[in-house]
Length: 232
Length: 232
Image (tube, chains in turn green, blue):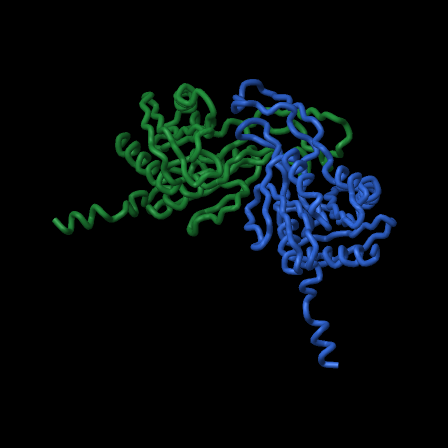
């Protein structure tokens, strides 16, 4: 009885052994000129927490990250990118190696159509910035998904969370979507905690309580393992 | 002789005693919607180095800073802002207290004309962002400069550094402009070092070698003291 209790208390180490997990993290930067860019409030904490947790559970981890203020977890294969186009290329280059892909990065939907070679001087009272669409990395991963690959996306929403998230799971051929309303206190960008909903392809939803990001990372990895054992 | 040599080796501690130094640091963030913003490559390192150096030399320090990944130096009065408009208000609120103002922050020249209440969905293939001019904080400081106040600006340039900088000193009523070409390796944003030119109202220029930012901070404070003793 005592030995069973001890076994229960051991954290799930090694249950991702033999798997390669590709994780993206941070917010992309889309240059306007050599000094200015468009970005977003992603701190990279969720992606870095996932990378550390997956490595601790035995996975080989590829972390594709934009510039953040975080130290990458030791033991992780780090690929540094800045723009959405660079992230798209890096993810596609490494996709064939991955058993699990978790796209925690906040990728800019649009980039400036032209990057000015020199710093733009402030001349006029107004300035018009023409933006064009970036590739949809998650969509490209979904349509090219190989048998046996588990694909997890994130959605940061400020309204209509459930409807937007259900459509995203279906359209992007995901196995799991982690959605959060970034307007809630304690949820979303820059915070150490998150309030997430797990959304599955069958439309079912699990609403999680406020959790710190490392705990949420382990919860997501638990789901990945459950999804993979259901499929096999 | 030995005592003179020892005195030479003592760093200039306390030579800013009795003065209040207001320093701005970091790059402003100009929101497009609740998650996206326009920013720039400023890391805040130069401003934080100046704040730490001024405090160590006996000044009372007010540090007005955007979000950065740096810890503010202990003993410094920290005011946190995000946008250029917030920085403008914070600087103007505290201007009357300052004997020395050093504007090391990279303030966005333009902000989106409208901030979307909700996250903008990616619908069209292109998007047009209308920007409008932010107030010019340094110019407003210059035209309202009180007798006895020393005003130091920074200029990050990518071309025509000298011409642009000389015009800026004159137009903004500065006592000193620290200009650097951010395209040079080891200079500018995000690096731990800088290659600066000091530009004075009389048009004279001092070209400094590659220095680490704390050393450059102390060099700038030396200049501030020299400027103030010439005026008194």
